Image (tube, rainbow, N blue to C red; front, side, top):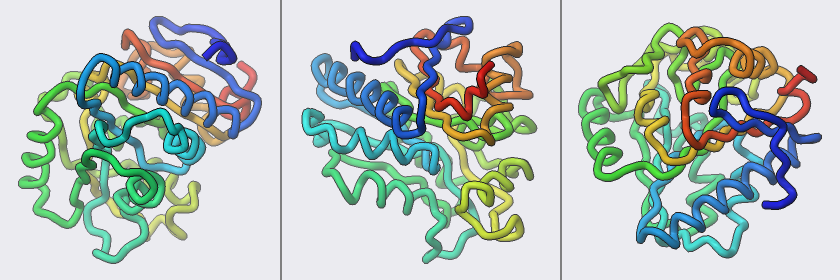
Length: 255
């Protein structure tokens, strides 16, 4: 990865600024691919958690086209899912992951969260799957309000004792889904979701965080310049031993 140039570091967090969104996706995808290939040299199965958001489009596109990854030895998870959508809705995060990952490559397995199941039972089931063995890599983004997964500021807990929990979504988080073009109006966005908690996300050996666009500029500023706090949950990335934040110029904002 000789062409990847680190812009700087804040606490333990490495960060990179790319000229365009496409460059950002290439750099993040290249880093994720390198991580997976190295892990496959060290262990039989690699476990990866994927975010489901437009911010991940370019990263995933690069990643799944890397012909040197043996996807049949990779197990995937996703990090959050709505509760309450109709069964045939196109807005399920599962649908995003199917379109962008599992319909295009053959993985050993991909464990999807089921937003139509009984929430308590689903949290137990998915927690058990996640805790079977360590998570190797998380490909994530940062929300406009600084959330990671659906750990919005009002519900974020750096010492969460749960692996998966049900949350009420912050209005800022719901509005972002409209801003991203995933829903036509705020009223259409579910009010509740299942989310992986912060401790399970940061338990991974590597975190690769992709953040494009000017709507994320304020959140990025807080991550890079403010103290670690649940008022901006993504600031926790600064405490991780191997976390990488990749942005385009719009998200970085010239700070």
